[in-house]
Image (cartoon, rainbow, N blue to C red):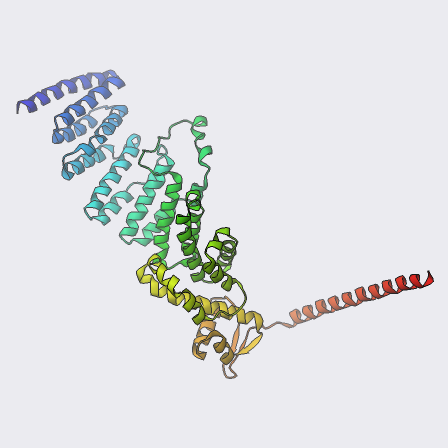
Length: 442
């Protein structure tokens, strides 16, 4: 009890000192008096008094900004020293209330909110943690280090994904431009010399830019997996694969390259998928995964792929990757793989045939006539190819109907080519005759 009254008496003295310094406009003196009061409360382990004094000092008339900043920073060091979770949460909430609406302690407020959200998450209150994090818009904080901003937004995205709020996760993820990860870090460090050195250094526990790049793309893979967007998942893995630290370590890049191959095969045919497929085939590292190289080659080559033979060859590989694809997605992915092979085969047939019977098309695709017609119709609807089906005759026509102008243009261009060839032939014959006559004269 005596210790408590001593503490109160000392605090009272320091409050008077703080008042004199504040009214005199002495920044250093005010800061020292305020931080000494907090230090006394901390050493006495008087957590309730500490919270009260933080509020009292912050609300004093004409309180200096520097003193409030120093107090908040000082009290933040005590958070990890608190005896239990309740005391910790109480201290964080007190500091949050003091920092609310004050632009000069916005970074401290963001860090406090992150700590509070972590405690809530450990207690299993993910929705509360996500709501807390979303209150802070770090992208508007000019003084916060870039890596810390990115790490904070990624934490917001992760909590949204954990609570399965995919719409908000996408909105938050768009605050980060993927280009930010491709900035040359060595050039980046020179900037503060030219500018006004206001940007704070990121805390030691914040990952580097390349580590953040990996975290970002791993979170985006989680988001796209929800929609089964195979091409976007593939592009995310491709970005991870390009990270220098991953490329140097075979134990890292081999599983990622396998995933890239699988997702490329599962992605629907379009120009982006086609260019990714060709660029992956040109990758020298793919030679170490010969069976995957063969799989991609089959999709690039304009030949019909036998689904049963392909499935028998790659079934075991696919089963191994099922954990990667996610348990619930495994069966869906197998169906999608078959769908992609059928689409590839229809495109191959449309390249080689102008007209084909449905019966023969079904034989080539290893499907029933109804299934072949269904898949062909789906591709026509999605504008992957142009085709017409004469159902009474059972004939598929892959040629587009040409109007009279197109036919005439084609005919005239063919005629021009023919006349050009005749002219060249005549010239060559004339040349040979002249050479022969000259030889005879000699």
